[in-house]
Image 1 (cartoon, protein in one colour):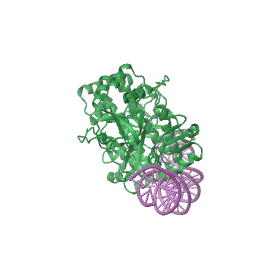
Image 2 (cartoon, chains in turn green, orange, brown, red; image 1 turned 45 degrees about the vertical axis):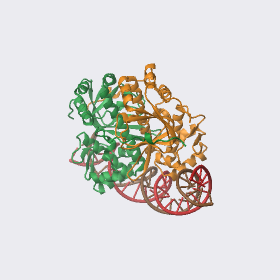
Image 3 (cartoon, chains in turn purple, brown, red, blue; image 1 turned 60 degrees about the horizontal axis):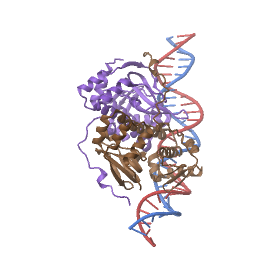
Image 4 (cartoon, chains in turn orange, green, brown, purple; image 1 turned 180 degrees about the vertical axis):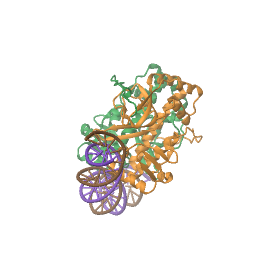
Length: 259
Length: 259
DNA sequence: CGCGGTCTTGACAGACATCAATTTCAGTGG
DNA sequence: CCACTGAAATTGATGTCTGTCAAGACCGCG
């Protein structure tokens, strides 16, 4: 697995979503990072632990998950290269879920201490990193909507739209094709259904010619139709940091007195 | 509705979850706040807007919600006094959901500008406010689990356990009694079911003598039993900022080379 | 008093879970 | 080289949770 300098990867990612001054980039360059290869299913951090480092995903996939009392696993999010899924452990402890590798992956560990020092010095970097954790939050909200309002077929379609869109954003999907080593059990645990039902829904997506899915290769044949069945809109991913100029008046002026 | 000095309210809240130096408290005291009374269902910020102020809830309830393409409303979170539900708008724009009043409420608006200046100056306050947005995130994760893994009865029980626990944390619930002006339609829209089914599940909770629910008054008669049927554990609320001393070794030392 | 919102109840249908078994296929060892 | 193995995918039959449709009861409000 060819892996570039992880700092470069992180800088590219941050540049894609926000403007980064040269000084900020230099700060990032100076961060200590320890690259590591992980096997499939390797647990990076577990619920209850208090990590002292963060994990930048360089290659492959990670996923967050939590096991409820009955041993049932719920997958909470997927992560693509450039993500720092446990960035939030800088400020919130202990971990309230697990972080594991989906397939083999390459990560770079960054100790908390230098990261904290860097952020304390730079409001602009704080803004960018804080924002990353907020985008994360937005994804959870969308998952709540997906689970609350949509049927099984729609949920799986939505999941695939999200992964494809995020993979495209980091240049890892071409013509709707990307790698995704999730089993149907994983899909079921992420979308809140049984593997049997997940299987039937996936077959339906295939039958409708929306995608081809062999092993860990997915090809979305008709993205527009997939988005349609997923009722997917990518705004919640906040992929571009375009502060809209449309500042509509706040509700404040309309608020009345209580009856 | 008796409302104290909103700054005091915020400081008390922050002191409850983190240690706050006197200097930090003084910074908060200096923030400009504009108190306002809101009517039931009043929309504070809407999806797509780019607010230039945050909203501290002083009294009553707020809720976040999003309407999907079919006009279906999904409620994403509830907010109790002391919360700043749109704090994240400091760093993430535009809004990807709506924020409204559940019943009549009192809020205090804080302009972004002085808040940003304050946070840029104080790493400790940045830590606390950032952390608040991360706790938020943790709640969404729990909602995903609730929706993904649990049946209707459990989901409603979970919702009630969460609200009760959060109300207790801010001193607004006594002996399991608290005010909660959500209709059964609201409950249904929050838990991903129809109002009819929500009604039946609530009746079942009543029949099991777990609670009494009249209008906007709820009395949880048997919290232990309710937690049991909800499979509720409050750790995800991160109510106490107790950095555990249990720092277990990270997975880093175990990671092997790829096959 | 009539109106609309909220809560409640019943009958029926559909989505999804459960249980059970079979197929496929990559990895492994004789 | 090929049988063996176990994980993953697939198929079928059946039951249950939850949605849909329809209607009635309750209640605050103009």
